[in-house]
Length: 171
Image (tube, rainbow, N blue to C red; front, side):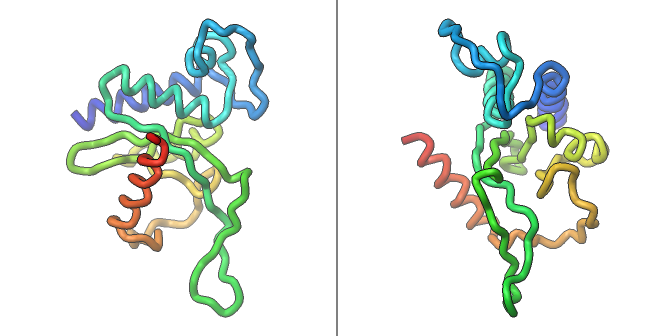
């Protein structure tokens, strides 16, 4: 099922890229007969990460693919402050972002990027990768992956953060 899921997810991502326009100032519609995602997909075809990720999550769920909508921040431009060995990054409101995660049996939740501004960096130059990853900035990174986990959080800590966020969203 995971190969089928991957192909279907990418078909939906590509459809959004090809049929909807990314903008931080989408056209507003007074039409109240549609909810936000319906309006995005059928009327305006314009939006930013929230509309793209919301639409992708709902389209995947409609196709019986386990998916969830996620909001957070893209932290980039890491640096060392003072003499510290720890890396830090300044995170601003402009770093806010939304994406989708798809559940794969035996793997867990895998991030997928629905926003066209990230499409090329995520998918076109890494077509042979088995699973996509989220770049730290549009355009991807130029450093080779040495296979080490540099996230700073263990898998258990990351899981706790993800589920804590989800539980808060459900309230």
